[in-house]
Amino acid sequence: MRTKILEAVNITVIYPNNVRANDNISISVNEGEILGLLGENGAGKTTLVKVISGIIKPTKGEILLYGKKVEFNSYRDALRSGIYYLSQNPQLIEGLTVLEDIGLTLTLAGKSMSRGSIEQYVASIASKYNLKVDLKALSDNLSVGERQRIELIKPILLDSKIIILDEPTTHMSPLEIESLYSMLRDLAGKGKSIIFITHKIREATSVSDRIIVMRKGKISGIIERDKFDREVLLNLMFGSNNTINKLGLRYAKPREYKSNILEVRELWVKGDYGDLALRGINLSVGTSEIVGVAGIAGNGQRELFETLVGLRKPIRGSIIFNNVDVTSYSPRDRIKLGLAIVPEDRLGWALVPGLNIVSNIIFALTNVDSTLKSYIIDWGMAWRIAKEALEIVPIQADSLNTSVESLSGGNMQRLILARELSRKPRLIIAMNPTSGLDYVTSINVKQVLIDYASRGVGILLISEDLDELIEVSDRVLVMNRGAIVGEFMRPYSLENIAKLMIS
Image 1: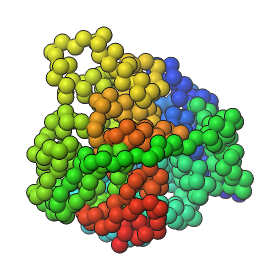
Image 2 (image 1 turned 60 degrees about the vertical axis):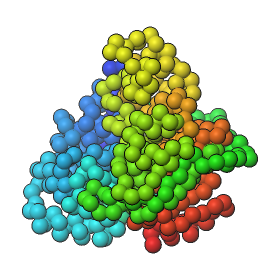
Image 3 (image 1 turned 90 degrees about the horizontal axis):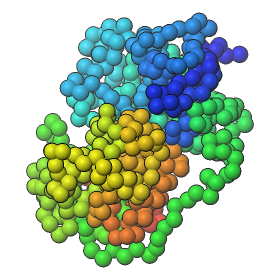
């Protein structure tokens, strides 16, 4: 009989806009258990674990640790009690090196370790669990996937008793996911308790001892490992009408690739520390074509994205977009030519926290469209433009006055797509557009890309989700160490693509 290490009892969270994110939820976690927390975007999973982690104060309910009631006033309190929360979008402290960031986390947890000890311990953990980490790198120069690796090391370094992972596989390759599963099983075998949040049934059933399913802020079911069943889990996630099983991507075929909308020729780009991040990249995207770029995080995908959208200057090579050499153009000028940009960081890059939906749409458009520029904003017109944008890709929100950070990850992504597509683009460059999204939302986003390709829009899809690339791409390019090392056409060989990613 396993010891009950954590209990969340009758947790209710009601946000200021009267949204009931958690409705009288009670869960328990046993010592040495991997507990899967499964649900679609907006089901209340993240809110619940933020209560457990001391980040959010519940409206009602209590937390018991080893049978005793605890009150956390901050994440630091939870951290010092042995609870570690790895966010879906890990935020390391900008301006610090990875080593300094880890040292700060140790301090917050009330622990002390010398620089040499940190380096030695991190190297040991990284080697054991196959987690590549550069301690000298600046935190703000890392991709989301690289930040996740660092965050996975921290709870082991801290010897945390309870580890909460919020969508940890979002930026991982299939081989990295298997390594993560092995790591979690090893930690659970040593008595660590793990809460594994996911919206993917396959992930939940692969690694969990029990699965708790959440739907619309409530627990809809608790399933033991010997009773895992995909159909049952789908019904618990989305309701018993089974419409989810009828979902699938609709392809408008055939599509004609009349000409190249994007050509990249011999592109060489330096990384953040003067090293070569891109080495002689050649690629093209045709009208109506979806070209996927596969690769493990840290192999030049982020630098490629930043260079193509105008945030990073190449040292050699050229970028031809819509028959114009845009190599020296700013992002704004590229957008004017018909570029839509969908970055992987939703908050802070794609969307501005603290601003409402209307402001996030209209300020982005006025920054490019000179006809909308004015020192005085006509908010009536702004609301009309926002409504028109959201007719392209609808979102779920109480009103257009809703602050963007209160939206679920799926609604944030829909908002970004709605805004970018309202520009009527010729080319869409997207990086990890479905990361952290549930099955339904992910299908919707991919369907939008397919539909726009059928209308003649070229799409460059940079993704760490190999299944996604194979599902929607007409061609798949593989990146490794800053170079394109292979090109694949349908029918795809998952094994051959994966081999090139890790060779």
